[in-house]
Image (cartoon, rainbow, N blue to C red; front, side):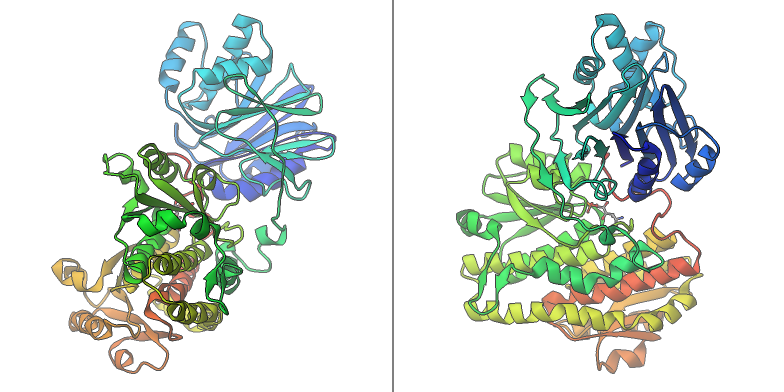
Length: 611
Ligand code: M6R
């Protein structure tokens, strides 16, 4: 987590850094800070958001065409002014910003303390600033060499940027496990955690690989590995649009992103199948045809909402392609000595493509010889780069911390893969594909229609905004939807919510139900519709308040439920794409009623690059 941005060039750095930090604030918002070099090294930092930082710097010297900024999600040391980045070395000459965790910082700190270093913060990052200076002074070497040598001693994950009062023409960045992109402009350079702070200024970027250090010195960029091997920068063109990272008239990114789903689902499907000839245009299916035909098992790894998409994936692959699937929390998978075989396919799902646990899970699976498919949204991020193949979701930048359009885009691509795998393994005929493609093509319009329920959902949200608890129930494809609905509610409105398989309720959670408990039930027309109705009866008998998501025209559930939200009919396997939408809107409007900051919920960050 944490967002970092830096600039060196001919412009004033401050406005670029502040704007960049605002775009990166989704990565963490415990504190913010900035360092500017203009003969002096001026550092301003504080607990709070970027807006608080702006207040702090008002009236201060903010000149300088070399500088860097940081927005923090606290790991080591509580969020306070002192622990905010940038951090400085013993002499105060070297400043550093960091995203990640230096695991051996305590040992390094102890050694440096014995050599007379004094630390002011509780952070791991400050130790690195001291270490670089210590090496520089003791070996009489350049700043860049000192950084390289210091990184040899570091265990952990980092994206760092370093500037020094004594080297006003140098900007140094390095990465291992946390992202860092370098923007190359006209006599100017940028560094950032992602490309959003850069796109207004240049489209030319290079993504650093793990273990690489970028040196900008006297207007020139060079890249080296920590082992001192020169690398030629691979320059890519950014395809992102500025409009996609702005709110576009919506009050919050989350609301904008919910409303973007007809488009993001369409974009994630577009060009990937030919409905006339019933063929796929997905490189993963073509290049890994033999693998797919022979694989014995799929393991899906992810975290949070991406894990929920993975659960939908399990149902899809087993239902449609008849392939055994296991869905794993990446954080558990990597530490529980799992059995992984060479004929397994591991699908890693991640919006950001940077989630540390998911990345580590695929590294483990790769070591054991499994094939890895990445399913990610952020182009050029670490997981796709570490995968053998995969697909991007084309949902566009997702900035709200609560994942919405990424989920439906992930499910859309998983559906395509399930049918693609099924066809290659003789489980889906051309006619099956024709039917599925037609159904998929109809989904964006069905999502659009579901969004028209917004006014009704606002009214329901008003009624339940004071609740302390909520239950979400679903069966079959409705179960992952229930889990996702509960997660959305708890993360942005701080209401305790549980997602459950509807039938499992009677094995415990039913004890929670009384007249104050809102119970959201996915009760669409599916093969288990009648079973869900029985579960609704069980809730009803205990006076729970039922909010049911039903298929248009349903009047059976309507008679039992307190509130119904209709969604268009679709194939059962496509229901998560439509049924999730009202739950996203419900959580959004409940959170708004409660005055919560929906785009930046407490304690969270968009990109979880620490274990
Ligand atoms: O970037 P990823 O998809 O790997 O992120 C995984 C989770 O951190 C993420 O889905 C998280 O649970 C969201 N806040 C959910 O809305």
